Length: 157
Image (cartoon, rainbow, N blue to C red; front, side, top):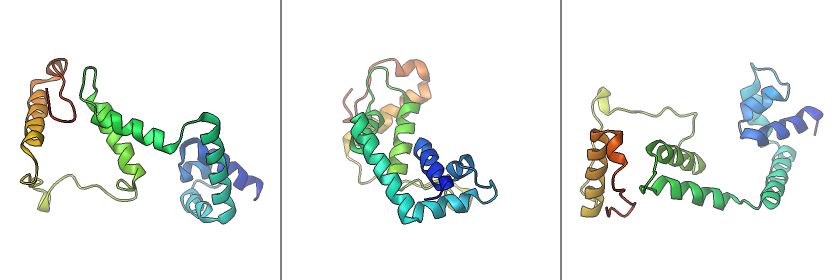
């Protein structure tokens, strides 16, 4: 690998952002996106990244599974001190992890022709519907209502 490619690997491992890693490694900002994507496909760079990630996992004793389990726990936590914004962020990170939220794709936040999004809830259990109703009622009541009794992921109060 060239010295610039080695630097790219170092920078990529900081935030897993290929475009920013390319810029920080000294590539042109104009071509950083394409170079970053290209670098991630090069066998020697891919191998270097994998080796460094495995080394970090062993050194820190934190595996990807641990991180995913922690995020999932946070995303599903409705107990005392639960934060709606932390839950949303945890779901966002989990979605990115499984490839659902690729930032190259635009997310649509409205239904056909800009209208409302239609949801079919016929497959939800009564417990799921009760949980949704409770969450919506608390959201309408404001932040002070969230400080009351928590709702766990199973729907029980």
